[in-house]
Image 1 (cartoon, rainbow, N blue to C red):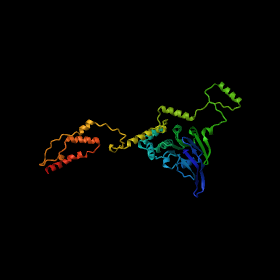
Image 2: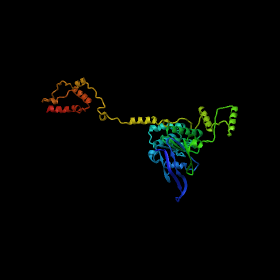
Image 3: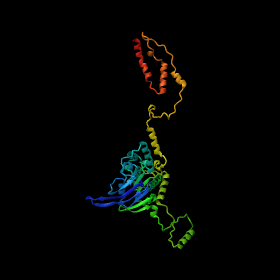
Image 4: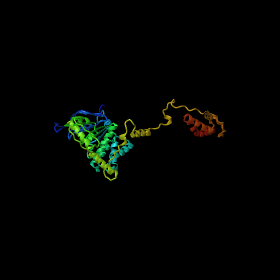
Length: 411
């Protein structure tokens, strides 16, 4: 449990038809990825990145070594239900629309219907596909398919997110959204393994990186430590006069230092996004994905606080709890204060009623036990039984005993 992902001598050898070693895709790989870390796995084509991911998830069996995910085996259902995976190619059912696709994957994770609906709408808004949610995903472009693929990877609110080339086919706005999402998930405490050929994207979001070649790690460490040029200095200032620039240049020449003074350039990505955002603010129509900066609330909730999902779960649990009848309710006598008895009411109920004159129905004089009980006595007895918790079986049966009294009288 010290690492979210740990591989020990992980090796994968692809053999030919005769069983002879043909290619070492991964060779003695040892990875240690901490919790709440964004880790970049880089390398050229054929360096073993995708093979490593497939072995982590149990899609390929390693030739040697083993891998641990979240403290257990990645093939364990209790472990892989906490993992979100976006493969290099989005394998989706082309005849389902976006809502049906997310609902399908939500069912695979056993999510409740209200949770599935809430997360589906939040994710569609996040990836910018709400306007085309009713269109079959088979009609989506590659970039739109990557967006819905990312949404399905987040439907279970995973603790570990594995992204294999997540920005392939995405426009610059979609790429920026993916990077912002990764940073937001890292702030919440998620662990993210990112594989990408776009080194600028990895540089923006990753805490540590590893570069693979030939199935082996060639370099590993923090991005700043690997990229920082300690033998050079960089000074960025606001707009200054040419005279100040010449004085600075003279100081640097006195130090025998190489000097290049230019104006900084804005990144093309930033310029592109600003241009598109300006067009969106003018409400220009588009039939594609819409860029948003909104992140789903269930992804933004802090761990230490009860999010909207916790409220939904607690509400459904309280609604589904069966209510026990008062007779079988398990309450200790000491827990419930005894009510004060009403002396007047008890005295009125237990007061003996006057003997009513009964009509003789037969020649024989009925015995006192056979005399019909007065109606007001029955009512008071029923109220008393209700107060004391007794079942008024005797009082309910007495009306049916009157025919017996007639027979006894005639006897």
